[in-house]
Image (cartoon, rainbow, N blue to C red; front, side, top):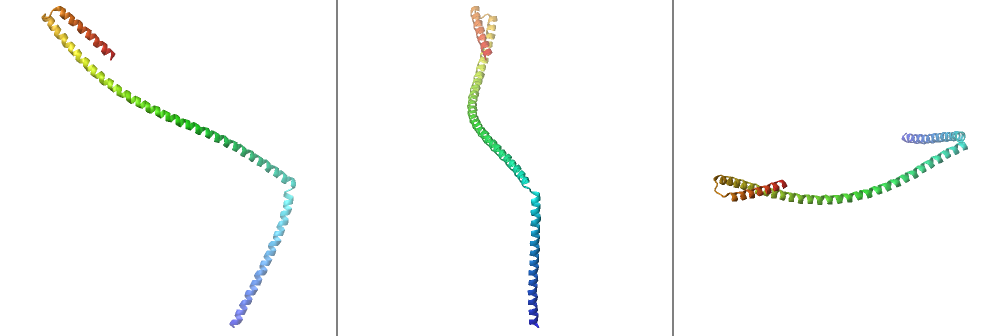
Length: 185
């Protein structure tokens, strides 16, 4: 019985394969028929849709568009060339500016050094003026003391009058000189 079952299974498999191959053949035949029908339809539509004059018009339009694109490309190429030249000029200008800035930095450095030297000189002059003013102040004080002493002696009449007059003249001369120096300072 097992053998009979095995034989039947093999026969079923064989028939199944035959059926599948027949189905595939039918499908392929249907597909081929459909392809042939579609080709005929497409060929008819192509004949109706695209006449030679229509194709030529489309080709002319495409040619015109291609020419326009080519002209645009040439213009772009020219514009890029001009831009490259402008960038080159800008680079040169920047290089010149960098050199000018470098020179300016050097000039500023020299000016800073000059200002530093001037500050030192001004500080020295201020110190000298302070010393000079202190000196003049002391001289002025001494003159005032001399005047007081002279006035006291004049009142006491202990000195002769000629000597006193000459001393007063000297003091007036010194006072004039002091006033001139104070005005100059």
